[in-house]
Length: 356
Image (cartoon, rainbow, N blue to C red; front, side, top):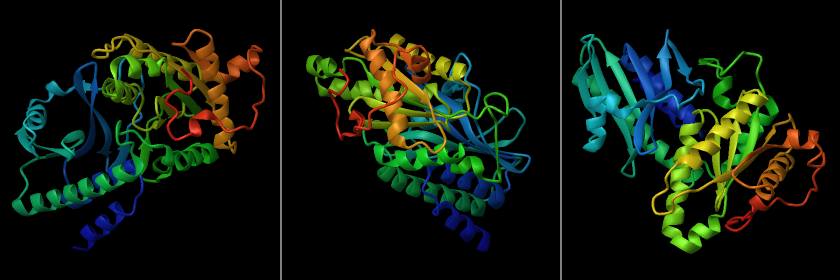
C-alpha cells in the first residue's frame, strides 16, 4: 500500500503533462512489473490517425522520446495496431490481445471529453490477476482525472495546445538552463536529435496568412476548423518535447529544442510546406508565415518574442508563405540589430487582425 500511495502523491504533485506521464509510466513499472510499458501519442495527420511512443521503460529506466524528425512525422498508422484501432473506433476503455510472441498486451486509451490523444500499452508474459488489474485501472483513473485538471488550466480550449499563460514558465526553463524539467530528471534518458553538443534552442512565431478573409468569407465555424487542423499539423510536425502554444487568434508560438540553425530552418520550412499542401475542407488552400530566432540565455521573453515577430513581419511584407530567421535578416542588413521595447502585438488577448 505504501508504494502505491507514494506514486499517487508523486503523480498529483506535478504541474506538467510530460512529468505526469513520466510518473504514470514509472508507477506502472514499479507496481505491476510489466515486461514493457509505453505511453503512446495518438494524432491525426492528413486524414489518417498515427501512433508514436512518447515515454517507455528501457533497462529499468524511464525513457523520453526525442525522435529524429526525418522526412515524416515518426509515427506508425493506427491501423497497424488492429486491437487498439478497434478499441478507439468502438470508444471502449481497454483491449487485450496476445502478440506474435505469445505475450499478453493490454491497451488503455486515455479518454478525455470523447477524445483520445494518449494510450498506455502494457506488455507482460501472462495476463494479470483481477487484483493487479484493479491497481492498473486505479492508476489510469488518477492519471485521467488529473490530466483533465491540467488541461483545463494549461490548454487552449479550441485547439488543445498550450495556452498563453503557460508560456512564461516553459520559456524561462528553456532560456535559463536550456532544458525543461523533464530533461533534467535523473531518471530520464533523452535521445538527442543530433550530436550531444547541439544545445541551441529556438523560438518561432507562426501566423496564418489572410486569416481574417477566411472568417469573413466562410464564417467563424470554418475559421475555427482551420485553427484546429493547423494545431494538428503543428503536433505532427514537431517532437513531443518541443512546446507549441496558441497565443490567441491565428497566432502560435513554438519552442524548438536542441537543433542547429540549419536543422531548425529545415524543420520550420517542412511545417510551412505541410500546411501549404494540406486540403482544408471548404476553405481549400491556407498558408502560414513564420519568423524564428535563437533563444539567448537570460534574455527576456519580450525581447526574444520581439525578434521573432520582426522576422515574421518581414516574411509577411515580402510575399507571405515563407520562413525567415531573425539572425539571417540582421546579418544581411534586412533588419536592424535592435528592437524597440514597445509591447508586441501578440500580447493582446485576441489579435485576430494583427498581421493580416
